[in-house]
Image (cartoon, rainbow, N blue to C red):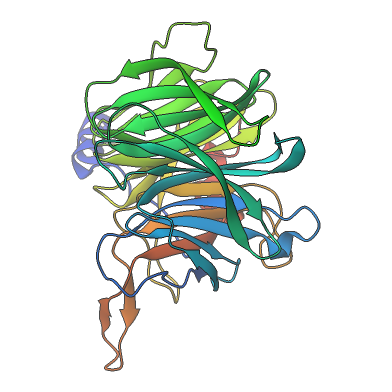
Length: 351
């Protein structure tokens, strides 16, 4: 039996144990035949009447927005420009009527960003454009919506690391927006998610950290470190972020690490590490170099009990006629959220 100190040294030298692997259950049909860098960010719309008929909205950052069903079938594609990130909120009053608001960051012009706003027609399905808000300058990258007591805000993240909070006014025939705060993180950033329960925005600065920012426009926009990019739990090029809420302020924050094709999970609100995983195995290829992610912990019918996790696959592969894997257009992998939580074990299932 090795001496305890020697055993500890051997374990440390061996490094952390391998991350659990969770297979995808479905994948989306590519929205394009191009094998370049196209797919980026998903958003999940849950049908309240029939959750099995829910939709996955996703961006092709050189063409527009795709709409898929939960089996991954492409239902619609709208050529709307170079839309990078997408987010949505249901039950939003738009020009006096309740609707699902969809927002996307438009980087068609790298010098002049646009925040594009739509209403989701889920029956068609299609997006009906209601207008846009045009901030002054910067290359539009990240985008997330936030519902607060005073209304709806959009957070635009620019490539150079500037975070901008835009208060939306959707009461008139055309939407309007007012920049209420901005902060420069100092380096490239993109991924963001707002927790509507707690009023906290989480922003991923690619090679530095995930930051917490209070969404109250009356307070200073002062980021606080939530999780560092340490090369152990969280790796370079942190991209997509997603919140799994539990109770008043608990739950989990999921983050995609592009450089090692993994996902790190942290407890809310404090930031303790809950574990990590990779999407691999099964009949469908896994994910690599993931940009955007989205999740919803509610049931989505018999095929998706216990929630849904969607992740962009930056290096999608198909099996060719010769039986060998070959490069394919980028797409999104759909994974049962329940399977991910089971793979993470006790570390992710306590608060």
